[in-house]
Amino acid sequence: MSSWPSTGSPPVVELRRATKSYPGGVHALRAVDLTVREGELLAVVGPSGSGKSTMLNVMGTLDTPTTGTVEVAGYDVSTLSDSRLSALRARHIGFVFQHFHLAAGRDAVDNVADGLLYAGVPLKERRKRAREALAQVRLDHRGSHTPDQLSGGEKQRVAIARALVGAPRLLLADEPTGALDTASGTVVMQLLHELNASGTTICVITHDNGIADALPRQVRFRDGEIVSDASSAARTDEVTP
Image 1 (cartoon, rainbow, N blue to C red):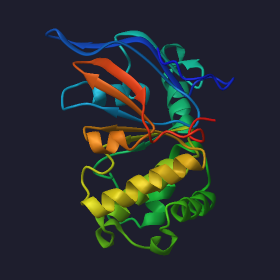
Image 2 (cartoon, rainbow, N blue to C red; image 1 turned 90 degrees about the vertical axis):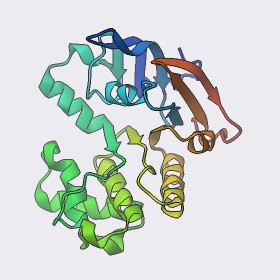
Image 3 (tube, rainbow, N blue to C red; image 1 turned 30 degrees about the vertical axis):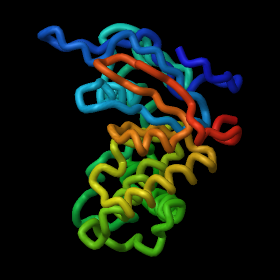
């Protein structure tokens, strides 16, 4: 279990002895303990097949562990109905994926506004919040542009805005620079650092040790297990309140 200090509120996410097994003796997670607290910026890092993608799905409540416990904002997800779990996920977790998953033919504002589709927010208010989220990622001037009119880095920033529009407690970023050139990837990582400095809890899932080493905390995976969980020189007192 992580030894990071308590802030007095429930962890954003906590896994206790979480396992994930598949037929044929495949063990993607093996008794994983992990605590992510408010304000952290961490990397879950490992090679292909190490279990980090399964970890993303379990942390994000997209998948359930075979055994063990997963709590999000203090709620044991195994006790929630599908509708309550969906509501918890919509309220507390934002997702950013490697290949953006933007809707073709819809401009940036509407792509971001789609992040509020299941929150019961009226269209006018969804678009207002979407413009505010685009301003957070410095793309308010590109709101009327469709994905085919945006660069790869701009598409990823739109995807980040969509993940942020519901003000989630946790942003899960799965290989956020994997489809980008070096310069665009650098911009995206700088943005994630800025968002964390403003209070967003962020977990980056990556195979890139260079990206991981630049973050305040690295949780390293191998064969479904955490083999190390450490802070780096990049960590400052401001990262974890």
